[in-house]
Image 1 (cartoon, rainbow, N blue to C red):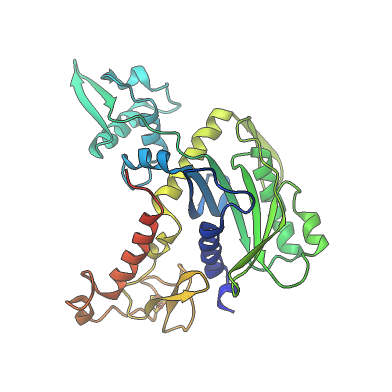
Image 2: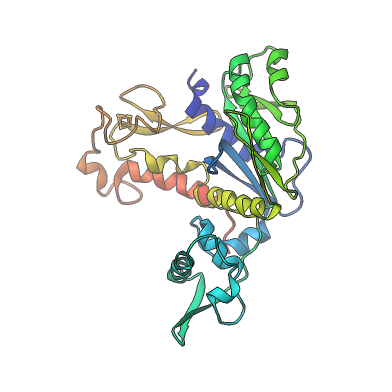
Length: 339
Ligand code: SF4
């Protein structure tokens, strides 16, 4: 079945979580969720992430525009003073040359995130708004449509890394429901702190097989190399807080529907098909959901949209390809309250 393949399975999981989070209890008043996919740090990449935040915090965040704010911009915004000050007086001394910080101050100014001026040859800045510490919770998922004993073994090291570091509040494995109980050998390989979710794309259903433990996000964490399982350095609580915000920002800016930006919706064979709980990309030439990697300009079957598709008949300029992109963008925006 189509949704058993990794890419469409992952899109299904993102959509299902967007509709069904939390998996236990209820969200607090005013809270909502944003879902992202394929994001991570230098040491670890996750298939899916759920970020919980209040609508109030998201409206404050929305003042800073719809795009992701990277770590350099966040440093500038989080230390922005109320009155004009030299940037070196307010931003903690970085572990790299100051010129990179200066460059980030300029970028922030170009995006109208702060106000700047020059006094006595010094670049000064002040905030326009206080930057909110907007994410309440971050939950990460590994998606494995076929979770057999060997796949569980491969995942175990990565999950142990998540547990030791405690960057996310919860770590989960999500797999396809087969109708059989999850094999005991699979359960044995996966750390008890990780949750296990089984989903049935055909029925648009999900079942929690094992609830995760809440991880220590406010305490220092331990880096573990998930391949060699050797212990790396300690990560301070402050570093974790910054990394959590960087991750949440990627979810905020990209969501999970941005896959279309790295595909070729301008190909005449590209379409979106409604499946289970949402759309998945579909290639009419291949007769299946194509992967992001194969749906590129290098694809041997790529054919540009006919010129007449780009004129008049479509609700926005640019033909069906642009229309697909616009539909997904609109859905992404709908999840983020406006300022
Ligand atoms: S033919 Fe190739 S480029 Fe066109 S939609 Fe299919 S995979 Fe994408």
